[in-house]
Length: 627
Image (cartoon, rainbow, N blue to C red; front, side, top):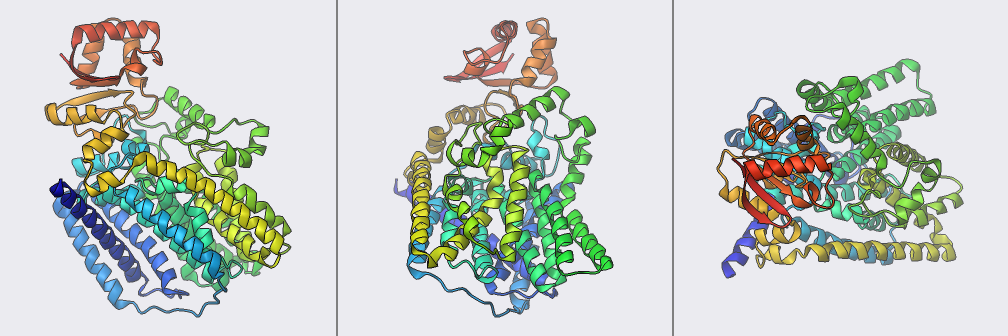
């Protein structure tokens, strides 16, 4: 027991040390690339915020280049890390920071101290969860599964069945490094580090750009305690990368508007491109950037030639930074925004029926798409959303619907508030028309939290309304913390973090099918190829070659059954696809929740009886060898 505890503590210490080292490299790389820029930072914190983003961009695209040329070998990765470390050290040593003297608002020490203590407690709980093995469903499906496969094959290749492997994957390139150096906990730590960057960016934005907000720490607490944000932060997802890049893009745009320094416009374009390289939903950001430039040019009465030049510069930067992953997708699948717009571009490994079903699935997220549903959308996402459900697949809580209406009482909004209000409204409308998952709304939450602090500051001179606001915010935080605590208690991270619970025991407790994957990894021949049916597409757990439909998990097997008149024909088809084993969930194949027709069930049962040999079962999971 003592050895297990000591080993676990050393592993967690190594994770934190490696995470600190990667953060050091990222910040140093950013400082290195800023060394010849003419950008003036307000504070060291602002410089660290933007430097980290540039550093992540450099690391991510360095991995991208290795993946393109199939150089994802141990030697290549170590050489890359050495080169990046040298450049980072040069960045830390060479750059002399040029700082402005900012106008800093007066703080409210009482409320801010309480908020600071709450923030520290929540961050500590979040870090403890980060140090546990990965259990996030999307991470097991592709955020970590795809980088793991790229590492195994030393570069990019078309992963049959996994459409998500051809999404924009800039964030996943950083997870390649995490998996290579230590594993899933370090990858999760990278996402958690991005959360810290978002909080830093919020603090810098409030202290130095929005003097009307005297509650920066309360704004940070409001953002982090949103249940969906907290849950996402301790998983190897990408939503906080998108949030970070979006916040940096808007922050840089406002600095360009205020200071007219071209470097800030280039930074705005860079982070707009990075956001687009991380998630399709961020393609709205460059459009908003162009509209913002046009509005700013009108506001400053800029001459037409300079407006055209500014737009050209911004869009050029966005395209150069954002387009590599779209070109990769085009080359590998024939569709730059795979698998969407299939009717226009088509796409390898994707079919019209799947495309239609996927569009229908996206439209079914939320609570309806009638006119009244759109009117009630703010209410529904605040009070009717549910985790792991088609009802928005997340929790927001009532914080914003209770506080933002107080904006009506503010007669004159600052120009910065108008900018972020337009960004939030436009992003919300775009989100409402696409996939209504609350995670996809996270990029607007920092700005809404900043608005909350702005409102609180405005009403501090009106004791009654200020008291009402404090009551509403406190009540909302209680709601959020209740759900955060439920998440924490469900996972029970302490045991596995300190070594009292093994990794295998933890994963078996959290993931019911883990035992079957573990058995297959330890007992099947190395050249096995497993056909996964209704195993939730958790291919990260499988160390053998495997295939799973990343959407509509019975699609391939039902297609095979539809064209096979006999069990022998099913057998021949599976052998042609080089499958050696089948692992499935009985409930969804021939159980009460099966999507198979009676004829398909009959054929599959006959094939199973004649051509499959049972190897292992843990109800409701069955592992068979194909004879």
